[in-house]
Length: 144
Image (cartoon, rainbow, N blue to C red):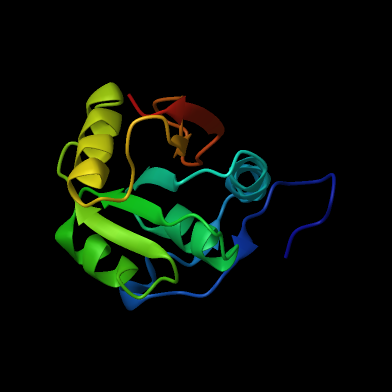
């Protein structure tokens, strides 16, 4: 158990196959809450996240956004597990650590599946530090 002010702990959430999505870091949990507010305020058409484990996608799913979420997973088993998450469309994409290429791929995929069009607002959840296990950034983009 965690004691406030003494150590950082992860917040429990439900698990999926092989327990890969069992815990969300407190920073990620806070960012997910911010994504809910930003996406509602800006009437975002889509939320995009690239995830290794599916934890962030599960946390997003639990927020019950009005905007659908595309969750890019580097491993096919993670993408399959995320198919059970509310409001999440999993997409297997091997190069999820390649930053801008991931966003370009996700937007192109979303356009080809009629989820977004030019002028729509999208919200992107991402990590910015190489060894950071949490998603700590919310980015707002307008589809070109």
